Length: 589
Image (cartoon, rainbow, N blue to C red):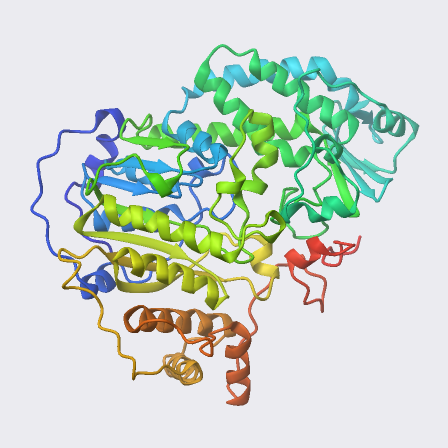
């Protein structure tokens, strides 16, 4: 159940963005733990609306969850901050709900995506500009993506070529002449076009690859430059699309077309595994750069056109939601030093980097940034990355400085919500120390399931299956509200595991190790936040949860896994990426 809004839903649909009304000050009520749990409870995550489907971004949070928290903890006209803005969900949803939204992120790609959503072009202008771009690109390289229709013998548009290693196995096409789709073994014409060395425009982006954590698969294959991820004709086609985009005069259309290109870019590379069966469409499915043994070369002209349709849907959704949003802003800024006055923010909702083996946002954005002409200061990223000599201390100190800034800019008596997930208690310690050291009081914690889990999350046994949503209060009187640590009290992980599992069985809730672990994490994090430092022996790990359940004879349901896992394998997506061969989990042809 949501908090009753101060403006009707009809009014919210009318008065947004540049048309936001001048709002009178509201009589603010007190919020406490009971009200949060009754009014919000555990918000069920929904799939993303169209406005967020125009570009991939790792770890995007469900818009409906973010929106409900923003609506509950703030009023129209309030200032909402996200110091780790990422793909812009907090900023866009807050602006859509008439809040003055501020987002900061070190990643310039994230900032560009958010800025684009705040100020989309007119749909008809974008559609016309996209047609011009596609026409120019087709004239330049359309002849490279043709084959012969097996039904009528005429020219057909090549859609993809399936490979095993360097050997082409299957050509897939669409014939407009006889309105048929088909596939055939590569013929001489196909091989000549595939092997032809095609020149790309001179300014097509390329650079040596920075070998960080997410590039180790490429390093072992001897891939040295970004262009080596592409086939010759796909690199040329991508360059021609970019060349045509840069000739567009309309700034918002050009920006959206460039992001449409980067959203398509992975599909133009050899990172697209040639999945069989029910494994979803061809896309960048795991959070690393890789070159699978079984892969497919997609036609960039075909898939860019598909992506244009998604961008157009996003633009229309944004416009119908009230865009352009004059109440929203985003900047490429280090949140360890936010350019904001003390006590000027009414609410914070943020999703910080998760540390440990979490997502490396900066590295995964490098290819996009190269084509957008952007470069992130990766050494300043709040991350744990042993391949770039960013240790746990670097990550912990970065979190501490950001949350100290959050405490400074948040008004006393106001709230901060943090979503977080990890299976490593050491990483949780970093978050705990950062928030507690800044002065925040933890009030509630609740699990939140993913709206659309990634392949890594569904295939990696130790990957978090849910985020925790933590709600913190900045006390009116920080000194008086400091927690009283009890050095005598102790905490038993094993007893908590049994207590949670027993309660789940009593309530008829299916018991899985991951669900028990999520509940235990909520419990121990809350307990130690109030009672001081966690002893090293108190390790609430997934392996420990599984061991306690097994020894107690508690039957558990096996967690669901993605359909594209080979039967019997237990290897994780990240480990697949790191192995010499990353094809174990592909279904056989």
